[in-house]
Amino acid sequence: MREWEKNIRQVVPYVPGEQPNMPDMIKLNTNENPYPPAPGVLQAMEEFNTDKLRLYPDPTSKILVNVLADYYNVESDQVFVGVGSDDVLSMAFLTFFNSDKPILFPDITYSFYDVWANLYKIPYETPVLDENLRIKREDYYKENGGVIIANPNAPTSICEDLSFIRDILDHNQRSIVIVDEAYIDFGGTSAMELIKEYDNLLVVQTFSKSRSMAGMRIGYAIGHPELIKALNNVKYSFNSYTMNLPSLSLGAEAVKDDLYFKECIKKIINTRDNVTKELQELGFLLPESKANFIFATHKYIPAIELFTILRDHNIFVRYFNKPRIDNYLRITIGTDEEMKMLLEFLKDYVGNYKG
Image 1 (cartoon, helix red, strand yellow):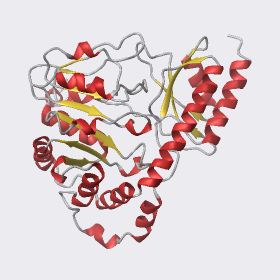
Image 2 (image 1 turned 30 degrees about the vertical axis):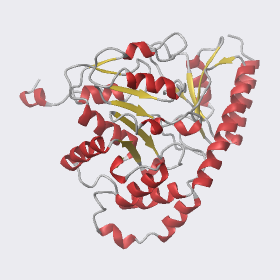
Image 3 (image 1 turned 180 degrees about the vertical axis):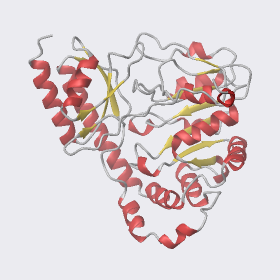
Image 4 (image 1 turned 90 degrees about the vertical axis):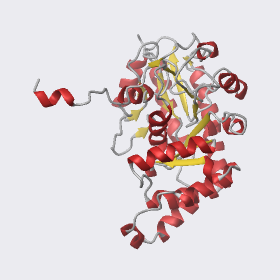
């Protein structure tokens, strides 16, 4: 090894879902929303004054922060925004997880958590999910340097109720507890209402899933003003202008159109529930999903085989070659037409399967 190589930080990076680009494909592998953003977003894009692009954006992100504060009925100093929830979560790891004690998150969850922990040299432990892929709350009662829980969890799609989150908070009053709610709009109850009771709670959400804006990279956190101030202090020490001007303007428009937002969510939930029933009839086993995806395993057909044959036919789902979940597929909920094509293929393949 050359001398200068010894000082290069060595990390194992997060591997995002494949981003294929081909005609007539069915892309169900990255949990994107199959429907377009709100009409107000599209109109704002058409009317956007491109001359403003020569100017720096507002470092306080006031236009978006204020809209989110109004929407959730909190104060503006309780809102932090960033370049997707990944940026927000990474900043939260850097800001809040600085103890010598290990932070806690499940062994099966969003696979960026251990990447950030390793990048920032944060000690961590990963309590094992139970046989039903659920979090065991008792595992989070011990002393720690912080807790992060995705709810609904990814990739399992399982959502815990508010009493579960409250119990975790009650047992961790000396630590920061982060609840990552990327998928909460698809069926769960948000922990937002607990913020007024717990000053150590940070709730993180995203525009990438339910608001159809993955390409704009908008995420946000809501919590006690002291938590938000600490996040901003780290942000301004890192990069004052994290949010670009189009994202701020278009993100604000997305929040304003609540009717479209709720109609879109309802369509995805209805499709998800119908697809769940049909997959079960084909011999698939899956937990009840509260996300915009399904986590499914077949009774006798290996997941890797299904993943491969689907991919060969331009139907992309997500496969995780990891212990305990390497016989599951994560299937994003697409349009009714896309899901119909998926189901028709699976009916034919399962019906003619020889083993």
